[in-house]
Picture 1 (cartoon, rainbow, N blue to C red):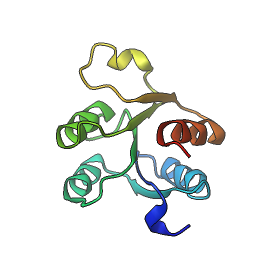
Picture 2: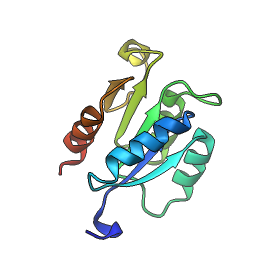
Picture 3: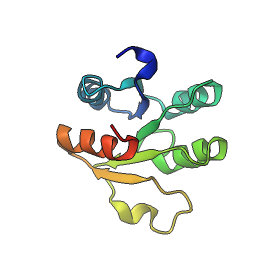
Length: 125
């Protein structure tokens, strides 16, 4: 399968090791992964992208902005954008009263197969 047929996933997390882990899990599963340590850079890239990612996986707690901020800003540009939030610091209660909600939530630490099956359930495949 060439790069064109592989769904693009943005992974946004201020923890470099977790970015590497996500890429190491998702690329062999048939996805193209673009990682971002800085949510602002992810948002700039998203704004400029001709082809938006099939899915965004974002951490909740990052230095500059939260995952909910990133969800809000991306969905202003693309209301149907699929987004998974991962977090080791908060649980799903964090967005119960928020207008911005991820499509799915995955608590950290997660197992590789949990991430892959979650992604497949959202993207089909």
